[in-house]
Image 1 (cartoon, rainbow, N blue to C red):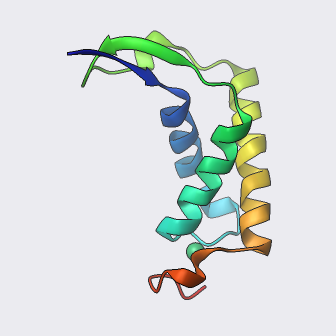
Image 2: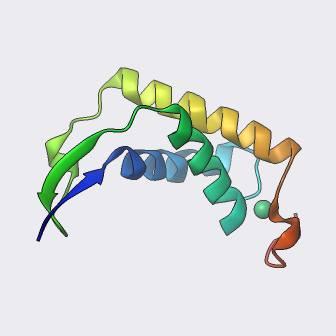
Length: 95
Ligand SMILES: [Zn+2]
């Protein structure tokens, strides 16, 4: 099946994984998703058309500028989540 995919989602996830320990922010599922969603809402989408299941990384080499933009938005998102965590509804996170 050929489909489209916003690979910015993968790039933000990847960057979050690299940064999460230095963010000083709760890493529960809720907070993780809040941070990624915050960043994705502020970054331009980058759609590619590909066979589902194929590797997307090869279709787009991440430029340094992209990397910096992504890191900046994740850091902003983490700051927001840290000062206003929404994991209270979820029992999984005590932080
Ligand atoms: Zn949390």
